[in-house]
Length: 302
Length: 302
Image 1 (cartoon, chains in turn brown, green):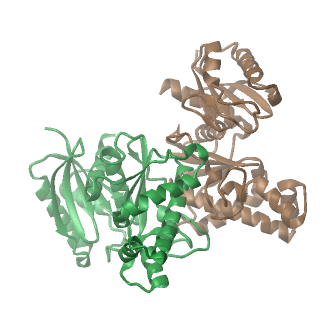
Image 2: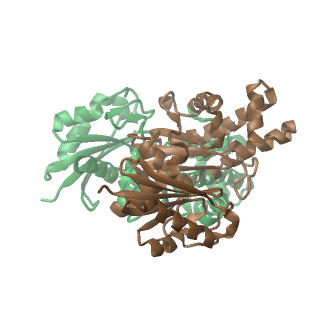
Image 3: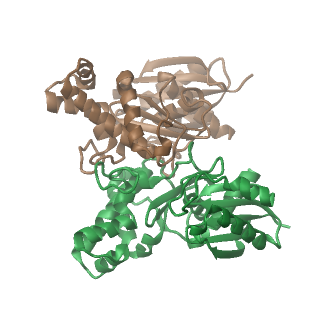
């Protein structure tokens, strides 16, 4: 029987478990509400039950758990994610592995999605890719030769905290003028409220921009400019074969991508102009499960 | 007999050729003036003669040529380096290989130095390193698991063009507010002239700063601040195990490194503070030859 791998997507809202084969096909997938307020013991208990349920007909080689950060992927510890209240240094891999007796690994959720897209989505057959998720926050994942580059301390692709405009807007515990403070859905919503008095969030700003509202167009242009600087800086750092863009804000990709590509071309060396590939995600919400499963696979089979 | 590898360091001033063994030891090295004004045909002819001279007693497996950019490392073509006048799309690897019948490879000079330092210098036994050379310009090289990451188009670690302060100073064909325009020796010299009317270049600014001149201290503080932002952004992009700093400006490392580390700590996530390693180069001008040789080795033996 072909080897299969379990991928877990632990989100603040939903908990999903899937069985993935070597070709990245999802053979079985189930989902329950995370019910984050029930705390980590309850959530992990239900996670284990869901894994048992999903894996019934299969003999799985590994378990990969994608979780929001901060976390320590090397020790398998979830540190303290803002959207998982009460979690504090939870050794999730050892708890799960002890119960199920299958090698278990932890990976940042954006890294998991990056690996899924790199292997079977928009980065398929490319030598490298940089995944960027633009949502309430901004995160990412860097994959080189089908391998996730997690970094020495697990902080690779924590690009939301890259400084784009020193002394600029500040967002949560991040740098002033960070990418997240300038280009995330939260920052677009903040500017919409500050400049236009609207309270419908980034979605309303995009809606108004589409209708030709100049203030809304300005806000989005500024956000795209910050994102373009971030991408150009990454092109001059690791020069990936493709940038893969996902996350809630990218639902407006028809408005974002043409302008983004134009601006990126202005910010890179002449020799790179017209050569920077920027693609939308292909696997949507499956990328996280598939990538987590493939990360577990890599860890046991490498 | 043990395999040995030839490394060439083609500089605007000197042309150096060395024989390097598997442990990174330089067994034989010779140097001649490049005499850049004599043009590429004369230079390559003398390069080939020097290689023949140096390799006499050895049976070399490969030749790696480190050259200033822009260049195309994949096709072995030197495009048009500012300090090698008259060179325009020179297919240097095929010319050398045809003459010597040894597999020959081209690599950016900063990439070569990065690989040399990674394998046998300040990055030895580390899983990854990011080399930064701060001189008249700013360049670099990124090494992951002992492998040079050159990027899809050969633009990896072209960090001089990273945007640090949008709309800031412009340097040559680079972005406004680029790292090179803010933190290179050229930019320090420019500020010294503009703010203090001195013409002794970066060296004079460092000298005055050491003597307590407040304007000079301010200029250097600004340059180090830009470099710190660049390093923090790279830490949030690839999180290398060590940053390795070299180049002429780093001769003032006793003044630069303590302040640089302090500023980098301000610009990274709390979880990274105190953990970012920044080390001076260890191999000095040998890194380029050793790295070029090891790049050639990797290309034939991988």
